[in-house]
Length: 225
Image 1 (cartoon, rainbow, N blue to C red):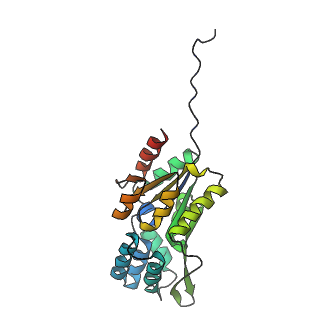
Image 2 (tube, rainbow, N blue to C red; image 1 turned 60 degrees about the vertical axis):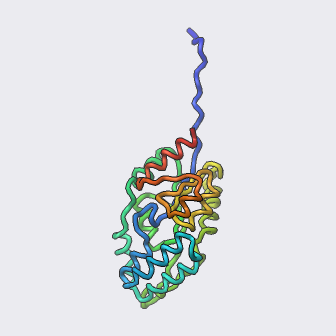
Image 3 (tube, rainbow, N blue to C red; image 1 turned 135 degrees about the horizontal axis):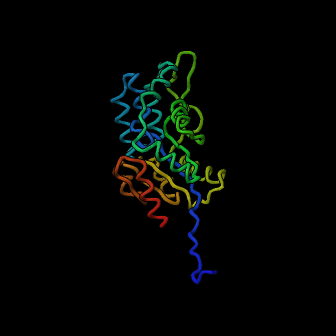
């Protein structure tokens, strides 16, 4: 017997790409400050970080200033700092839910591959962009090498990952807290300031103010309808 009422077709949920910052977003700390604790320069580095994340100083210059204080640290410091970093509340559940929805997650960081790669591996994330610290036989040289991952580089990574993973740009999600995240937040389909610095909070398209990454879905699902 046929039904008098046609079945209701629920629109398919689009496949999305999540691109997120690491320091003070995926984790509670700033990796550069954890490294600086070992160098005795934490106060100096924290002040420069604060100014950079509020957009008061050019990111590349701030990176140069902060990294210069790390000269002489041993290579072993990377493992110690990776162990000291703590995931933000909801991080594991957030990544797992993204995976269950078929959404790839990528990390774009003004921090450093030497630590971020360890954090990414623990969460099963394989797409990572970050700065690299130069190391020689004496330890850290106080310099980086390769491209600096600043605001423009983060936005570029968002578009590159979307192209590589065949995700429509309208369906990208960017998450971050600092001034160097603003370009990718503006250019993503959904740009979310996560417990962000005041200047970022004011300018970002969307905001999450509770320090729980699963709250990201409240925004995404509301926007998606």
